[in-house]
Length: 242
Image (tube, helix red, strand yellow):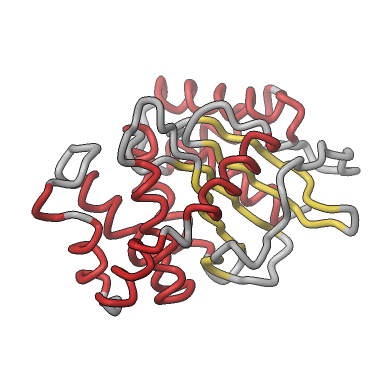
């Protein structure tokens, strides 16, 4: 264990973190590994992992990256959740770094009791997928989260609503508007939310790093909240090396 902590601290220092920051981060990573998900292991025989209770990738999901990858990252998120917004740059970095190695899936988990616009914004992301496929889905989601992160807000202003985001994304305006009017993506949002509850999601963001097996998805790491980027990277590397 001491050698493992020393190795992680050394890696953190290479990322220009101070020694105290590196120690704290190393402790977090080690703790994550000891939670039973196997995010950090010492090599040798790989212990069996807990199975993911949520659904595997379905036709209602949109995938960013390598669709047939054995490593899947599923994030349950709420567009009005401040922690989801603060995590967004980390998720974009994960997408860019591992786009040729993993399948990333964004699923909706709007907390409607405290975030009144989150459900409609989730519908809008799915409408972007209906109109523009995988590219439209993730381009729209990124534009929406980029705006909120850059403007330090959880809400879209009246003059920059989901239709404006759709236009910026380059989607067919009429097709997007028709989709929103028809409410056709509402069942998808509900399905994602129910799936998140089955998976054990209690708050957002909730991200699962998964390894695909013949029996289903094994949980390599379950990461709650807007954790630092190295935690995501360490868990993904562990999944890729299993």
